[in-house]
Every structure is written in structure tokens, then in C-alpha cells.
Image (tube, rainbow, N blue to C red; front, side, top):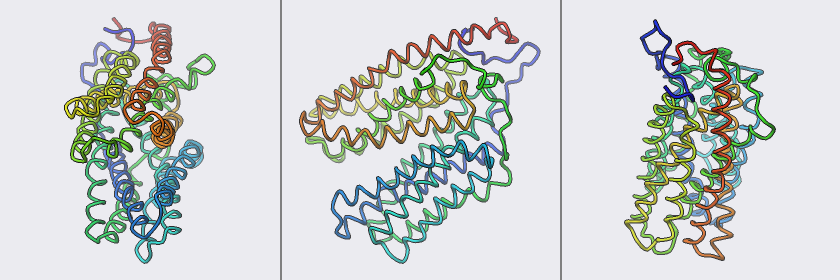
Length: 406
């Protein structure tokens, strides 16, 4: 048995903890519908703005408004959950995400689209943090990683289905239908509110030990968000620039991005199961290495085989990092705080990375800029090594208090 994570039941309790429950299933549903609402309009609004005569910078401001609202809401979500509870915070997020989409039906001016995007970003940020915190609250500690892996599958489907569906429908003059669908999907979590817990169960950190009592060195609490942000920067760079990289056919970039997303979803689920048994901190360095290898291999953009292989490698490493960092944050912090930090690292890295990458790519070209991004991922390996040591040290100190350890 590993010293890093105790996943087996105590003697005399051979039955594994039950993973799924009605509140957890409804939380997954809220996550799925809110992400569906988000992705349906994510690419459609910039596309409509460009079609109406907006410049590329004007179209970009729409996505920027969405990201700004998301980050603001994520920063405030944990406070909202503490003061008002899960139900109220999720209800507010659903209304802010879904209802503004209806304003797109009568008119599609750039000002309206920017305003709608900002308010929807607020709603999306509240929904994302709340569903993540709820999931952590409702999962049995010994199967938390596996449950987070299932959440990853639930959250991965809308990106694969809703994003291209919205673009296709809008391209066939059905933008109003996309807006109506986004509104309905965004508001759907309201129907699940009554069956969700109003407050957390007080379980806190790993194995029932309150996260607030975990002593960490100064600055240690930022290691995991930093590690995750390095990978989300790379993910944002690939999603934004691979389709426009010179020498990469659109069919190849689309297929490679799809396979990368599917690989990330699968590896996130497998990482959860493995981490529950052997420890999530052990996965950080191998996952960063694989993701960095995939990123740096993008220097060979002229080879379709290598581009495809690179995206598979990056997707595999990214999925593991997604799950491992979230699981470790939940072990160290209250659920709402952990979800806030994880979501903030995701959106800040994913949104900010492409902006900086564009400056480098203009000087170095895409292959070299992709390689520099891979080096950035490698640069956080020392932080991952310290995180693994700190986690092992903490669990050794707690080891004598754990039943069933052998």
C-alpha cells in the first residue's frame, strides 16, 4: 500500500464507498448544461460580430468580455458560497448565464454582444466554481479522484459537441436558435436546485481532516495553481494557434484538436482512479513531462504524423494534470476555495497564454514559439517535485491516525 493515499476501506468494511448519488448526478447535470450554454455561443458571437463588419480586435473584445466576467465571478464565488450557500450561488450563476442570451434574439449589435458576454461570463464563473465545489463535497474521500475524473468526462462532452454545433447552426442562419438553446441550457440548473445541499458537509480536506488545519509553508498554496496554469497556457495556445499555423491543413488541426480533447478526457478519468490508490502527487512530474514533450514536438509542424502524435501526448499529460491538481487542492483547502483557485488558474492561463504567445510567434515563428511554451511547462517541474515531497511529508505525519493502514 502506498504511503501517499489511503484508498482502501478499513478492516471490517469491505464494501467500497458509494460514488454516485442523486445530488451528485444533478451536480453533473448542472455542470453539463452550463458548459453547453457556454460553448454554444463561444465562437458564434465573434463570428457574428465579424460578419456584421467588426474588426478582428472588435470580435476579440467579445471573448475578452466573457473571460473578464468569468474571472471576476470566480474571484468572488467562494465568498458567495460561504455567505449564501451552494443553491443560491448556483441559481444566481444559472440566471446570469442563461437569461442574457435572450437579449441576442432581437438584435446582434457589437455593444449588445459584449454586454451579454460579460454578464454570461459572470454566470459561468459562478456555475463553474459552485459545481466543482459541490462535486468535491459530495464525493467519498477514498474515491474523490475517480469522481473528479467522471466530472472531467461530463465537462469534456460540451466542448466536443456544443462548440461545433453552435458554429454549424449559426453558419446556416440559425443564430437565433443557438441563442435560445444557450438560454435554455444555462437556465436548466435551476430545476436541480431543490435536491442539492445548501451548505457543505464540513468534511474539508483529505480523509475527513479539515483543510484549514493543514500547515503549509509560505507560498506553498500557490504551487498547484501555478503548475496547472502552465499547462492551461499551453492548452490555450494550441487551441488558438494550431488552426492558423502555417503549413497545417485545417482538416489536420481540427482532427488533432479533437483527438487531444478526447485523450485529455480519458486520461483525466484514469488519473483519478490511479491517484485514489497510489497518490495524486506522484502523477504531477510524469504528466508535466509528457505534456511538455507533446508541446515541444510541435516544432515539426510540417509532419502530419508528428503533429497528431504531439497532440495526443499533450492531451494525455494535460488530462492527468487537470485531475491531479484539483484533487490535491481539495485535500488542502475547503472545497469552495479549491474550486475557485483551480478554475481561476484554468481561465487565466487559457485566456492569457494566447495573448503572450502571439507576441513571441510574430518574432520567432510558430514552431519556435510552441517549443518555448513546452519549456514553460517543464519549468514548473521543480514546483511539482516540492509539492510531492510536501504531500508525502504531510501524509506521513497523519499516518498513525489512519485506520486500516498497512
